[in-house]
Length: 294
Image (cartoon, rainbow, N blue to C red; front, side, top):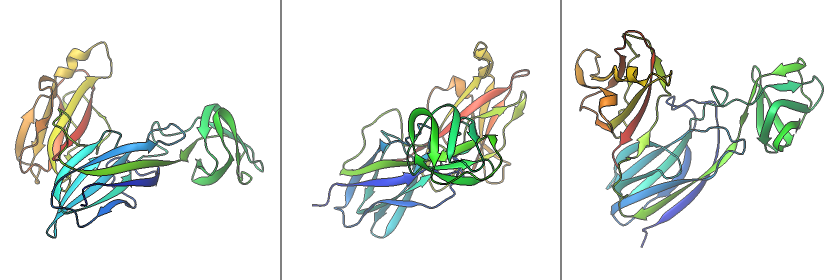
């Protein structure tokens, strides 16, 4: 009986950011002719990127029953799991690592025109074959890697101005997916989806309207507000979260996130969310993640 399956996917980080949903989907589990019933898919990061920098990954899950497809979209990390009813299921991964932005950059590198040697300001870990992108899109491959060291050798001579340059790496990693009969355990944490990095909102103002993905199975939202000045967190109580219809004219729901400790149900018909800072003096930051049915 076809009740269990597993698959190991080889992935590579990209410059695509969280919430962009850009790039090519990588096939993972592709299973047909299951015994109809309830199934759970679990995910595990088997081998993280060797450079120890952040990565982001989401999974498109297509539960299929009698030719009808039910779509779900979740963020993937070790411990992520989702359940659904199916007689077939197809899973695709999409990398959203935002390499080259924010924290996903390497220390400043010193390069020399005509030399394959690259020296970093602080220690790095890079593997042979890994891609390094310098400055305005110059890509090179690593010939001799390093573990917690400051120098690498490229597969070819560096061509360009000598000196200190910014750079980032593209790294491979492996994620496993396993399917089994039954539903996931009941926990306080649903399957989750990240579409937005934390944002700051000025006093007495609101954020932009963030679109709520309509094809992911979103049923709840977890919003946290905080003061970047960690010694004055009482100001973070001066916040609201508002849900709006597709025209952005009808508010369908509203709640104060720091008075509501947990997942808030997304009102039916919501297409946009807005994060409101009612403080008169302090800029506040908001984090947002979506809860997915399953």
